[in-house]
Amino acid sequence: MSTVTVWEYLARQLSMRVDVPLEPTPQQPSPAVATPPPVPNDSDLPPPPSSALNLYELTFGSVCGICAGIFIKKGAKFVAFMLGGTFVLLQVTSILQNTHPEI
Image 1 (spheres, rainbow, N blue to C red):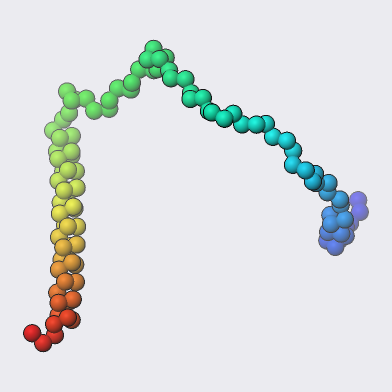
Image 2: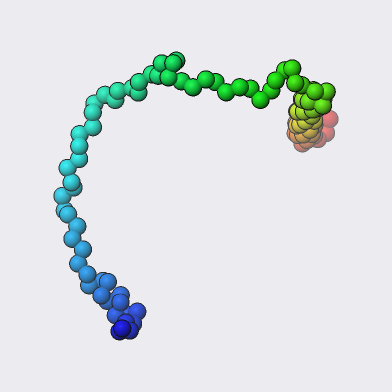
């Protein structure tokens, strides 16, 4: 087994000749119009999955959870609206104070 220095290895790698074709390889001509995929028949499709929510198995806890989620979503939107409105009003009052300092 012979030991090769890094410089000898790089010299060997750089001295290797790589043949690159000068002309591009011919490509297959693409069709002018693409054909659409075939539409499957209804009999070929699998049946739709059953829903995870069964109206007859809803419990009191499920109904309370759904109502709480809707309430939190609506409440968060209201809080965001009020914070945004407050910010806009503060900006408007700042502009009015700067444009008419001696009213």
